[in-house]
Image (cartoon, rainbow, N blue to C red; front, side, top):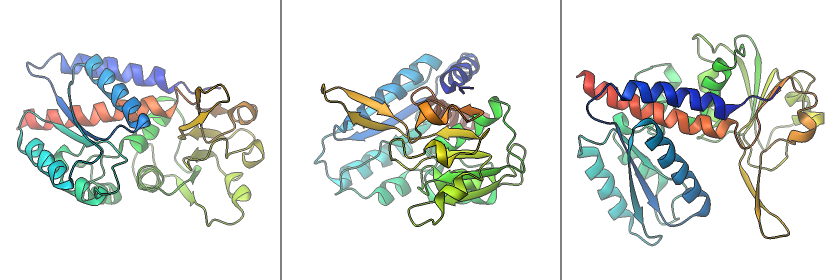
Length: 287
């Protein structure tokens, strides 16, 4: 069975649009982009389109590749102080001369809708719900819940230990909370006996950034497979094809449920960004 992340994300968008329509003002998501990374431009367009669809004002601040770090930090300061701005997102990757750490830590935690600020990461680790969860892990958790996939007591194996997906997803799914309580194993480039570990998974999450890395032999019959990978592969004819981290054609034959690429986890990441932005807006209006 294929898990249709786009369908679930569309349902979330409809719910959000209805909630936002009840307010006189709109939530605002402000995005900073430095340079013209092709993948970043695609993601920005997706986020802008999704924001407009639900009634969130979207502002893009686009800087040249060679822009000084100080200029970017000053722009973040302005957005922090602007009461109309509910969410601030800096599109990654940044040019090498700009510090990811400085940029992330400059954003006010209450406007950090990407969930990367150390304060929000700390709150996530201790199970404090007043912070923001990173968008992709939150999207995966929502995807599992909306698909009626039981996580409690299941063995979840995550391929990849990034700060964006692997680490936060492990922290979220092991929490002593409803729709969590999983036993989580995180694998990475130094993990031994990888095939044996992945074959023990009830739920396998591939977030390793290598196209078709997960083969049929790495998955047990009936496992649930979530593919987080988005790899841009150039074809012989010059076109670009998007492939996930899972050999979908073969793994889908033995998995009980599997997400495709595209239309799987990707739309859920965007839906989570919209949810976080609305949450920030809602908190502001409750004061």
